[in-house]
Amino acid sequence: MLKTIAQIIGFGGAGLNFLSFQQSKRRGIIGVQIGAAVLFIIHYIILGIDGDGEAFSGAALNFIGLLRSIVFINNHKKWAKSPIWLVVFVVISTVAAILTWEAWYSFLPSAAMILTTVSYWMKSETKIRLITFPSSPCWLVYNIIVGSVAGIVTECIVMTSLIIAIVRYDILKKKKAVKNED
Image 1 (spheres, rainbow, N blue to C red):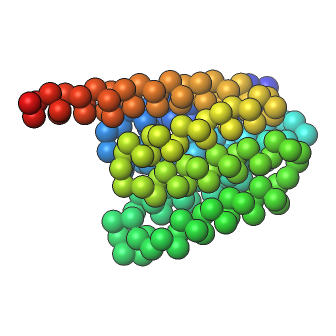
Image 2 (image 1 turned 90 degrees about the vertical axis):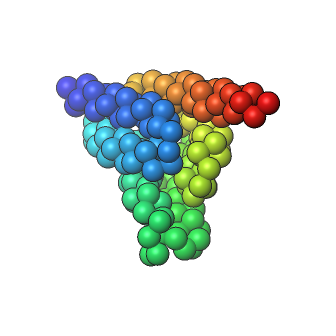
């Protein structure tokens, strides 16, 4: 029963992840990601309780991602502008991987979090999408190993959403802008 509840909550996070990359502005992308992170924290905690603790790396790194997103969405404020935040979240993600080490695959969510941290620091929505994309295969492999069906579906959805957004905003919109200049 717990596993079913965990998967339902995870699918809620999957939906939010898809919606996040369909946002045209950085603030929208990160804002929707905050909701997805909350759902995935709950998802991985329940999977960890129901299983043998394998999913706690995912919960810990999603919690770090939640804090990161809260700081980065506020980077228009003086306290959140400092580049030290980028370093702090990369270091914390690395330490979390060490502290929650279960096996070789424990580094995958950490690598994904570091890529996403760097991407969310960027001001360009295009760079956010391009740098975030490689994090999905890392999460995909991790989710397959820990048995997160919702996580597996999420990463397939995220990769699809990123491709749609890259085509929609970064390729077609730029082609249209160039055509209008001619």
